[in-house]
Image (cartoon, rainbow, N blue to C red; front, top):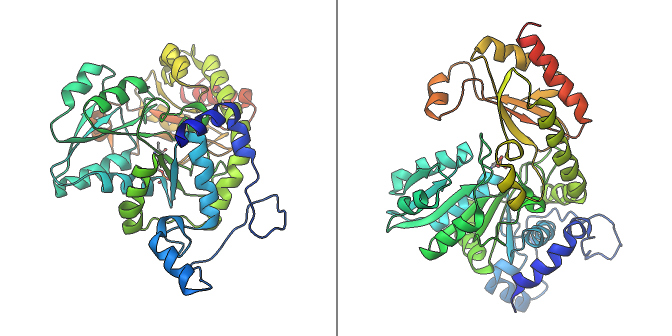
Length: 396
Ligand SMILES: *Cc1c(COP(=O)(O)O)cnc(C)c1O
């Protein structure tokens, strides 16, 4: 049976329903909320059942480092949402990303990295160089440039769309076709858009990785990650990357992620509306040089590929003045200064940390490049706050 086709069908119709669905209970209490099976180990009532489980550890409950009923509920939901056959949940987004690359790559293998990817993903690939893995960065949306970067030993094309920092999007169908033609495995980080707004497996990608610490958790209270794809690929990564590296998600975290999913459709709708409102309100502000977000920069392609907008964006100031930048960041009242995003609260994060001017230039970024995450508040409040902070910075 082509499970994926079946899932895609349900999914197109009922993405919201998948988020809202009550998880099956084993205890028959008719609990509306999923069970938190907080155990490390599972015991067996006979040698026979122990023996059966040991022969199929991936699909049995033996030890929570391998699998757990609460986490499995989350895996079922995320697989359905992304339209994949199987999902494995990890202790963090990086847990999922490192396990995937660890499994897929051997010495002398090569990776094509398309678009700017999450900085820790890139540093993990740098770390793998000591084991003989190499990579090429491609920052072009041109198919020929991608083809040119492919070598005989290229095993993986890894991308993030929209990209980290400049939020540029690529045409997923074009990329996955190139990968297929060269028998290369394609992997995409889908954290920004969530499966509600972008389903890369439907565009032909082999694997989706995501940080559930962001929108899926949705309340800034968990760190969690996921990998979704075909049964064969995900199981192979489970056997090596997941089991060996041991980035197991706590059942309690899985419970919080399931709770986050309940409101994901509502939150994403609001995030999407808020970010469009904010960009429309700020795009003519003479003190802002660029707003990096698909809605302002790649409107047409965004409309084709995304079903809504994530609310993480970046701006640069017209004046390349660190004092003004500092003033702007300090004057914001509605945006918390800190890393991460995806909760109800708005966040601000300048790339400038006080001493990293050189590395910012090397990365091709502006010294005033500042990330904003648009939370769930009334968007006019969030716009007014940016404007008053710019007034402050520009000495009005
Ligand atoms: C946060 C993030 C990650 C890493 O996820 P963690 O859960 O923090 O390990 C990876 N990719 C993107 C795009 C992210 O925003």
